[in-house]
Image 1 (spheres, rainbow, N blue to C red):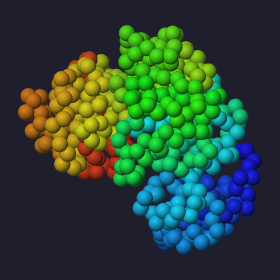
Image 2 (cartoon, rainbow, N blue to C red; image 1 turned 90 degrees about the horizontal axis):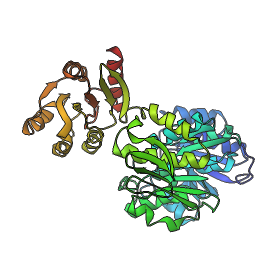
Image 3 (tube, helix red, strand yellow; image 1 turned 120 degrees about the vertical axis):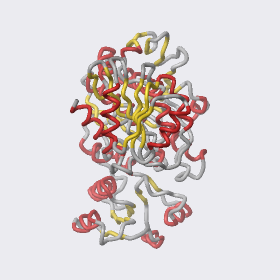
Image 4 (cartoon, rainbow, N blue to C red; image 1 turned 30 degrees about the vertical axis):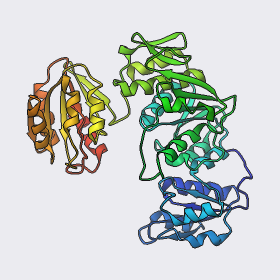
Length: 448
């Protein structure tokens, strides 16, 4: 951990506990700050608050009282999930010009290792995981951090100068940075999202672009040259620009005649990439550019791309049995996500869909029915899928449980087919969450 005097004797309010808040509070205390903790959950139900109180911290629970600002605060470190626009304490803090940051800023202040920062509306987790695996294959000491589930400040605390921190960053986190500067930044795409959190689309977009604002000429910005908005914002960084594209040859990573290149060097044939789907191709190209910039070998990149099955529950290749390939996309909890999954395949596809009926319009799914051989629908919404299938003359069977639909789909499947779990619905009629549903599907495949 790098020693810094930035926080010594400063009065810091840590808003929000859980793993990141607890880590930030402890590190700030170690760096000499006077730390006050505030958490919205009541004290009675707050085991984290009691733990921190036992370690000598002052903890205020049950809300975010504006009066805490009268403690002569120098800094607020807030949980990314606490919104600015509906939290009076934060609105008043902005009026008083009290700096507000997220825990990633603490990680940057103490890290002796460089950062690779990745953000996007879609594809962050897949890309960060892919970069990490390629780095490891190239014997580069890579550590995952950030929104992917590893508290950045804890990872940074234990990092050495020989490590690189491959960090997934959300717009929520990027709203709360001041000095954070990744050596390599990657923005895959920026579309409309999280407008319940952000004031408007302009604020959301700028939060994403905060990733590159502190970069210098010695840094690199890898960007999607097919995204018109991103290319219009290149002026916001001094970093060296490295594009990637699915549509044209660029001075970076690109797809040309079914082959993936970095500059003029062929990396791999597209057909040899195990991770399927047009949306995943941009993740692959972004990862290739980042890894080549950091010194990964072409052999390592190709090796990982030939075996990377994807992130769990996100168009994850599970196994091939008897010529039938099984894919788990339990994360597809809405129609758009299932449309995207269906577009990933050109071979005959048996679709497993259903779950909690949230009254979404299912009709757009028909755009992806060209290769759908049959639908096996389950759960609360099963009859709606049956009605849709009948309109398009697609065989459909309905079942109460996903396991019944899986068994029937497996019996129909022939060599060359795909069985795809892409429910287009939430899981809550039968499962705690999409992860539990996906795990159940994986277990079914493993039992065949």
